[in-house]
Structure formats: C-alpha cells, structure tokens
Image 1 (tube, one colour):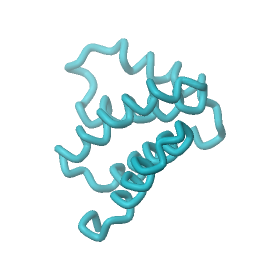
Image 2 (image 1 turned 90 degrees about the vertical axis):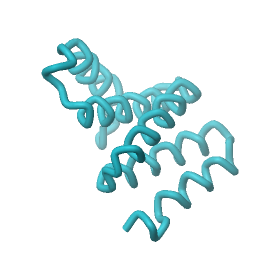
Image 3 (image 1 turned 45 degrees about the vertical axis):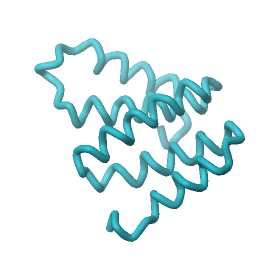
Image 4 (image 1 turned 120 degrees about the vertical axis):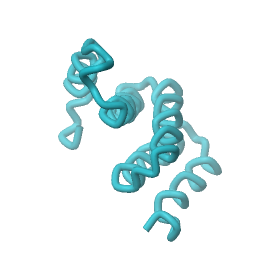
Amino acid sequence: VRRGEWQAARDAIAAIDALPDASVSPFVRINSDCVDGHARVHLGDVDGGIAILQRGVAALEATEAQLPLAMMRAWLAAGLSKAGRTDEAIEAAHATIAPNDL
C-alpha cells in the first residue's frame, strides 16, 4: 500500500476474504477491510472506500486497539478530504491525534 500498489493490495485482501472465518482473526479482518477502503479511495471509489474505513475505524475503536487506529483514522481523514467532506475530515484528523489515544 505504501508504494501505491492499490490493486495488488485489493487482490491480497480478496485472498484473505476467501479464507474461512475460523482461520483469520477478527483483528486481521478489520485491518484488511481498512486497507481495502484505503485502496478503494485511491482507485476512485471514494465514497465506497470511506464507508469501509468508517466501519473499520468503528470496529477498531470497539476493540481499543490503539496502534492501528491512528493510521486508519488518518486514512479516513484523507478519504473524506478527497471527497470534499472537509468538516468530517477535520474531525477524523483531530481524532487521529487526540491525546486520549496516547
């Protein structure tokens, strides 16, 4: 994903999604969903990617998994900004750096 290989990321996620639920942890599923959302934003499906990122961020918040949460919130903020949803982007960015997440 860091190299901009968005379709390759989506292909890897499809392989994860094809695995039986019992063989993949919920945490891995949540993270792969967030990567999928981020990739979709970059491939032009901005609204679809945002929706996936919003679900993923909400799921991570529920698990209190702080390490990946900041990055996923930043991806959500970037997607919202790309969609012209400035107020929501600022809110997501603020949540990314909020002191209660440290």
